[in-house]
Image 1 (cartoon, rainbow, N blue to C red):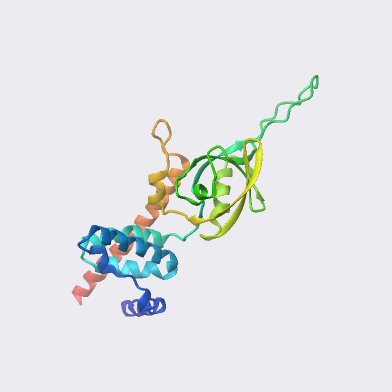
Image 2 (cartoon, rainbow, N blue to C red):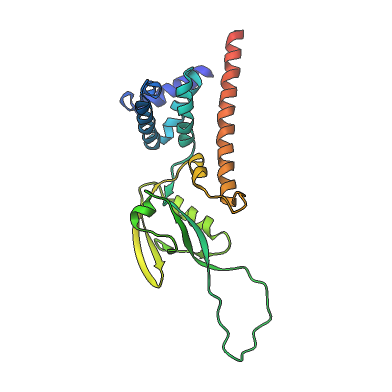
Length: 247
């Protein structure tokens, strides 16, 4: 079985092409600047070769004894573990639909509890140097449409908006209809790459009491999923080594 797996990985690497394989040795260069540059170049390589990169990086991670390389491979493995998705670079909250005003003198109907309905999402933060920032989006802008999809719904509207954006691959152009004050405008932007859970967690805000939001809890769960996968692969490799020594 191990022979078959090794042959598969060799064929996989061959499919990438020898000239496309990253230079792992640069990750342990004596120069900090060269190590940083090598990791950045490898990050870009992982995004382009996402399907094959995870197997290549995992093999290197399990086989190397260099602690510097192992530390630098972890965020690259996390990047390879998660499918690249479209990214705008904002934090948003639902915009509550204005209630209809009853005509004077008209008796209001019996009060029936109803779910809140939202029209649009308000941008509460634009991260610098992201597609949102570069396109000119600003705090307090309200997104009304994403391409032809109208932004409206219930309490989970922000999750639906995120899913609508992330279903597009990185570098896809999208059109946004935005309300800024009383003006309605169209903004076109090219999606970036959704950061990994670890990268996103560094940017997510806490509440006033330091409590994590529901979106933060989701990101933490994604991080846990990745860590469990990596620890499982390390455990399998350890068991394989023990079996080899017994033969």
